[in-house]
Image (cartoon, rainbow, N blue to C red; front, top):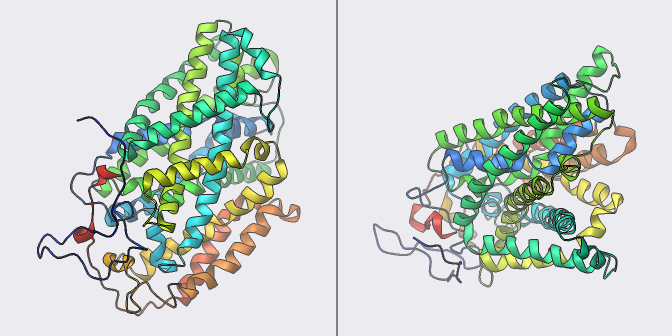
Length: 506
């Protein structure tokens, strides 16, 4: 059956209860729409391979390779890098499963999931933090993909280099053409909803996996089947373990955004087993393979000429055959688009829909967030280390406390018992109204934990602790929230099936 673009929704007409044929009471049009509704258990199509492909794209992206190869450049040996990635992968696997199980059981998107702990209106805070980070990085990643496309086009058609010399708002004519081309491709994929996202991720996963594996095999052969496993610098045992733990912690921090809103994808999975198995092959197994490929690429180049590369694109750009260069660039373009959609497009689309469900749907909200990503001129953000460090880095430090509160509230305070229909009610008697729609206890846990996490992440005085800021923030926020929460309350469990929609409709 052919897919068609998402059309407008009518949030004032919620699904009826199958047993009574009566619409559930108290559903607020300011809180409910078919995009924000839970997904029905039946008909969910995100299986184990879908999750494996999703993570394959995310793990094997250019930024992650730059991170791993950077560890090699900092003096970590291949064994230390693999140890750090293995430890980080196990932590990410556990944390991601906790988020995934919530999404699978409830069928809720992230902004609605936030209402449980923060209240129906207080949920806008964590949702907006996630959205701002995503929109900024969507623009940056689109720009980086356009740079790869620009290199590809000038290599195949050298005459186009003449259009890369001028400047309009900081970008050349060719730069604008490639940027808008990548931007439009992403919008086209997104226009067909989450089912098309699933199909594209499933297609892109094997493409990048085969590409980087072939690139690593070629470099291993060029190095005479003998690579350098370190740059030669030695470290004491204590320094070695500190590097391993710091590398693992930083690896977890890189996934802080997806750990937070993985429910946006897991809500389309049929059962917990699918999430456990898909995440196992997509995260720990995939990450170890990724680490091995990164070590081979960096070690082979260092063995050949003593040069430290920054990412696989350095090797692709040096390929002697134009045909192989084109194929390599296309593969990295495909995976960059895949990562950008999953990590930086889906989240703000749900968040903006949550802000105005009566006027925005999943498609129009995605278009709005993509437009904002152009207006902020992301190449200026990327070329400003201060913006990356203090603005995006500071916001990133808030992700740990948000995760700690949401997870502790769901698993330890409520023990998974939720009244899903009341997440869409503005009644003062509803379970998630709290005080004016805001849970002040959750805010009391978030503010001090977020402040401490931000200080650890940003101040030079805490440089040795900064890799662990995500864990400090998550742990402290979770502990404070558990201490302040009403753990003796009788939490009622009510299914959301009566107000749910088909998952393929997103």
